[in-house]
Image 1 (spheres, rainbow, N blue to C red):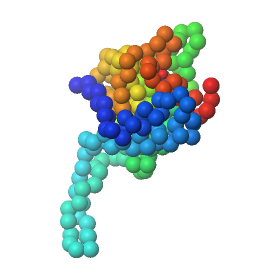
Image 2 (spheres, protein in one colour):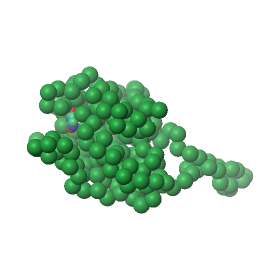
Image 3 (cartoon, rainbow, N blue to C red):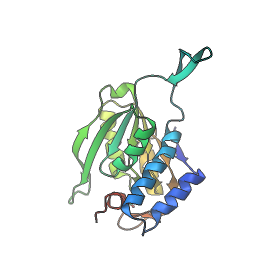
Length: 209
Ligand code: URA
């Protein structure tokens, strides 16, 4: 049931290498993330259902393919998810958008929800949860728990980098959720950062520390 798709397209790999560089400034990092999101969006939507409608071209009528069903729901896991969101919205501008905010409780080390706002009719929509970094998987798994509690049934998880630890966690907690990523990196370090990784995605995007 569980699927991991690594988008190894040369353009995605080239852009990711540029993003990894420690000297790449925030403005360039954001632009690259937006560009690479287009390639990831292409892959994560590959199996969307299609219907046909009759249209009239300048030459003739034809049965033309269109996306079927309710509009997609894109769920950004704050704050780094917003970096993927912009690029995915470029390709799917009519998608509905939701946000999940989680912080880590310093005592229990467990993710705690501080914000949750998602589109209606979630059970009838393809849901794509967005977070550039699948590291331990704690926040991603929690976010997907919340989405399932809200009724989501058809969920994919889109990230830029994944660690084997996060993939294993997701696979155990949510075997039905396909992961689409640009790379499967080596491991997590003792602080939970992905190695070789690119550092803190939110800080790299927004120029914070
Ligand atoms: N979150 C990040 O932003 N970077 C990591 O390497 C791991 C989690």
